[in-house]
Image (cartoon, rainbow, N blue to C red; front, side, top):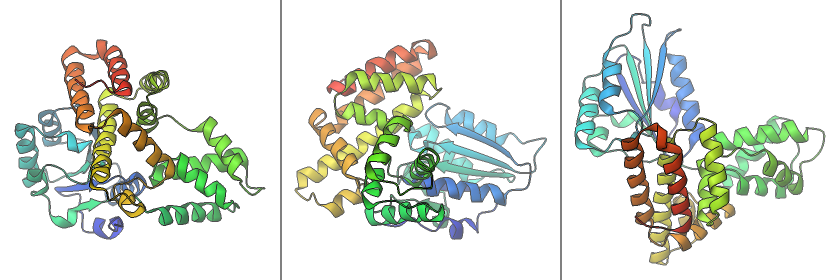
Length: 330
């Protein structure tokens, strides 16, 4: 299913007391939509971001309710909004959405396609935009168009390599394709071997490369990536939210296997378009034949980290990743 046209939907959004949902796994188009919204705000508008997994709904709403002495408009971005699940937090946020501050634009962002129904029911249908992952043929077109615009030639095998090695969203594709041009140059046709060698050395680590190591039971590699991400100031809550998203997708994959309906179209529907991604989830299914166990483990360690404070974050995350990589249920 294609993403809704964010620009068209975004035209009706006014910074005066609006709330908007930007949902779905396609990060690049979601970021483009956010940038368009920023341009609709008056110059000098204040912008504040929250992670729902880190900041309580009470604190978020309190900050939004407090007016600004310096800006005529304010943009509040609530990331990982699917983490708002507790009844009191959902009701508090829903009550704000029904009666928002007049100078604010509040945007709830999530890689999920749904939030709590009580929140969604408060938002007009046209203000909920879902950005779906691109189908394989659309991703191929996107990559070819990108290199064509940059005046570069690229082999078909190189395009396949890019799609296998890079996360399935246009933000990651744009970033890594730009690096390829920077490192390999525009003066030659990009070949598959060159692209694979370059991506292997320059690819940034993320929660998704962490999941790939976990999926293959590579404890040492997973812990190495975890420590690199934590050293780069990635928050444990954001990492756990991304890993939970991966394991929910694993649950969809396992359900598809159980139904006997595994085919290319159905795999693309649940966001498993590239061969590399499918391989990761096939390996993860061996370690976690019931994804709910991994999700329960993530929930347990999220609680432990909240309860024990930042001093123990690194140790607890180490233990969590080791348990995920060996399939150790709570």
